[in-house]
Image 1 (cartoon, helix red, strand yellow):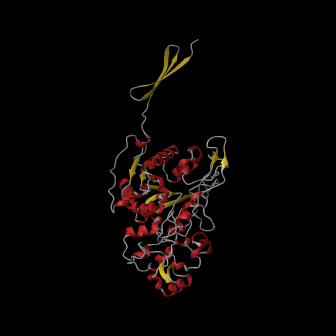
Image 2 (cartoon, one colour):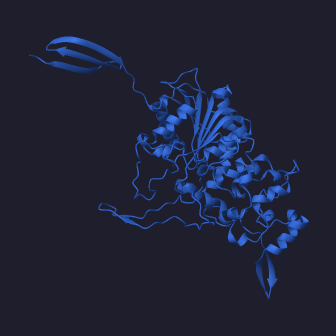
Image 3 (cartoon, rainbow, N blue to C red):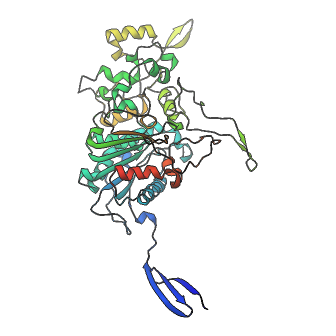
Length: 465
């Protein structure tokens, strides 16, 4: 007796044809139209590279990809990446996030938006040393992002904004400038909590311990660069009153109907020491041995405590920051015994200057060559000062829950129902240097098998089906 035989063939019209034979007789014939195209033909990709160099950026032309899989009457998702991501790497982010949303049931139009978050003057190998400059470029690119979103979707009730890490700085600035949206999803947000709610910058002992270097411990808080803006905040004509992080985005998120903070309590980037860390804190761990090349793993975690370092090293550390503003002391030379020595204001003298208000003419932090003493500074100068010279003294949104104007805080590192359950375990073993904690880019880097519940939540909360 002859058996059943199946034949599959590709036709010239990109169809999969299936023929089933019983012996020599064809009993079933079927054809499935099929088209194989690159994933980037299934969503829109826009680059804002160049926005950092001009006051008004001409948006890239609109276009329609060749193999869209979305619903033209549905909602629009705008996703943007974080720090130290090249334009080419942004394409990898877009492709991965699009596929994961689609696999979770989304039929919303998807837009990947690249921005110039990889500034370098020393070459690509040192991009990670220019975080403060990329904060400025995120702020500078926000207007272009706002106009792009508004052009692509005119109905704010159909806009869904998703941003990862420092991309949230650009998104929040766009909201501050008036961008409106239905939902805003923050992932690993590299934004100071005090920028969302000024109450998080509380001058408490705990804050002082974590974010105020020891040599500033006895100085009045009103002498800090972080609080310089408070001297001028009541004069709307003085730009210096806008050079502070507390409450900078306080009205921004009110332009969003629902805002979700997807943070991770296990993210090494946002981990905090009880005191300001040294440059090498958390960098090296005990090496582990393996039975294959290279046999020794030094377990270097260059990203450990990055947030805390970049804020506590401003003004004092040229590798992780710069030598102006921040926690650098203003100094001058005075003669003594035939030699000249550097001199700076003492804590006692500073307290007197704070009391009589003369400190406004004699900043204690190092201000020469910065925009920090220019009452007529432009908006561009304000952004640059915030990025380069004004230290945040609060925990990051991406590592902690925040209260003001946030609809829900979800800990991606939490397996409970209030977090992001890992129904299939985790892709790192307990012996890994990161153990089983949710790290900074795991929404993309970890296999979809492990993080699919996150995307299920996004599709549900964003009404993307």
